[in-house]
Length: 333
Image (cartoon, rainbow, N blue to C red; front, side):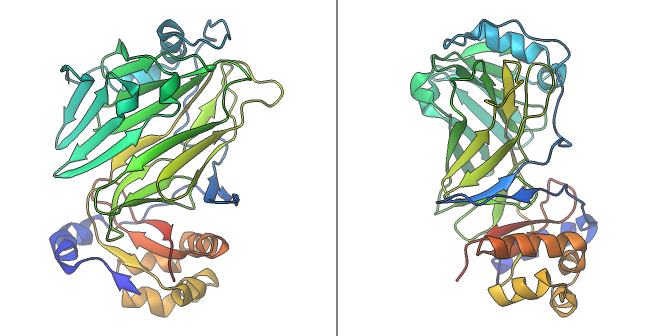
């Protein structure tokens, strides 16, 4: 068993006593990939958004800025999330949005990747299929589109909470079903999956620094489509099952990245993970105090069981910028 660096726990202790109120995330099922861990999105999800009208697109391999705009304008909740953000630009950036202490930098050139930065921490996220995309075009405040020619296109939104939403517009059945996001974190950081269906970005010490919400995907008629993440620790792969019968194109999908802020984190060993998974967490939970109370809940048991199924160990943390206590699995000896 190991814990975070003492200085980070000390800096968070005052907030910890106030914020550890508990959180009940939605459950997701697990799916094992050949070379990576995987989690399957629950359907429907709490964060999913329904279209209000069917977008008019031509379903060809070329997905234009106009078609991306058409798809997004039928989901008003998306564009509304950034309609009041203050946007600046420079020679390399299509949009720079600073909200509080967080800055999102969306590049003109899709090959440059999106940067999410806060207090000296910078996360670079490479867009899927960037080699097929054209330079950025503004769709709405804080939202840019990258037209492409493989049956799908990317859009990126910096919303008013300081998060960044990566949107994929899929316009025909020949478009890819896998969309890789290569995540670069300084000092040996990596991507880990959560049993709720999302992902977590951790730094070189295993400290949670950013969360990726459970992804969603909808067709033009508002039908939920199956989507899930896998990862090898550096690439977050979103799988979108859009080639099933009855899908109405275009399909819109997203993951959303947001900083968690540094909070206290505990890392369980394999033995401790095992005991939590079989409902014997009382002694372990009391050792860790308020944060450990999560381990004795049904959600703690389910999270530990999911970690064991993926040959990993359970970690529990309290994000400073999000509600409740959350968990993730990590690679352990």
